[in-house]
Length: 398
Ligand code: HSE
Image (cartoon, rainbow, N blue to C red; front, side):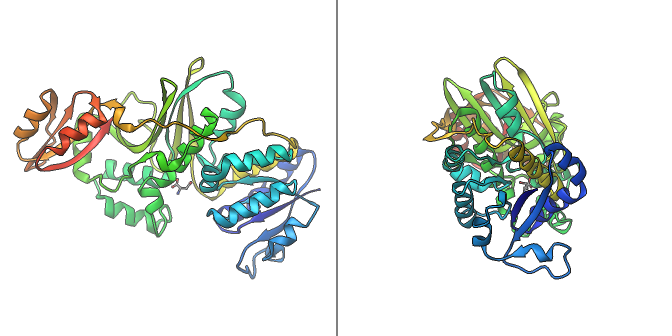
């Protein structure tokens, strides 16, 4: 019998228990044994819940129980989760988690401890929910130098942008609706400001580079400034807009950023809509690969966590990968080159003098005009844009 403990009985924690219960025959066959949830750690009581008798409130019970071989950390947050994870690994227990904030911040240290103790620290669910992406990067695309990862890594913002694009609704209206449907949190800041996607691309960048990609150094811009008027221009161009989290290797350094980007029809992420996530990977030998699916939600996320439990059980030492604590050099986004879509008040005469080469877009929005600049660095663009009177918005083009 494989005894496990689940830390946190919220959405993902209850999903983990449900996946194990629903698919127990299949899962047990795969590990050639039987998984049993022995404890569920939570501050709350769950009267009437079928697993109420497993709920405990004291972590010491788990850490001191020699029978527990895998700890599932799905409590979220950093501080207590860090302490509990570290102690579990030190005690020779493997840990499976969906906690991107913890992996992004302390992954290097926790992976090192896991390695020293010959146990696993697995975090497939921390990026892309149920989509396999960590394991493919670790175990499949191992013969390549991966020089680009670009992903739609946040379901909430993809849902909001898709609705705004297809229905012409305002950001505020769609956000409200998403909250009512339970797609967006009551406090949506982490999603809509791009912080969630930033943690995820930091994890992927750490994995492909082998060094710690500090999320605090990643340029991050959310979707809160995108409007229904922007969508009119984007539709007129025959393009779409996505919150992209990108990591690009150039001359041995990485450009890493999260921001809304206007995509052409031929872009592989063009048709990824609603709450779906997708990750585009380019390897120097492989070429292009795409991973697409349910990037959030209780059961897809729990499915990835349980797959990690299976992995931990099947192989006590799975951790010949990860990253070290050396800080990765992240290039200043100011040097990145691209075109920009710009909206200005009036007829754009002043902007025309500043940008010289551009393509006008007429979306029929009164009192303003929109245009696409030629390619230039972010720094050159910012300098020019700062000297325009009446700038309404600017969005990066792919
Ligand atoms: N809030 C996240 C999202 C959940 O919307 O994608 C998965 O990390």
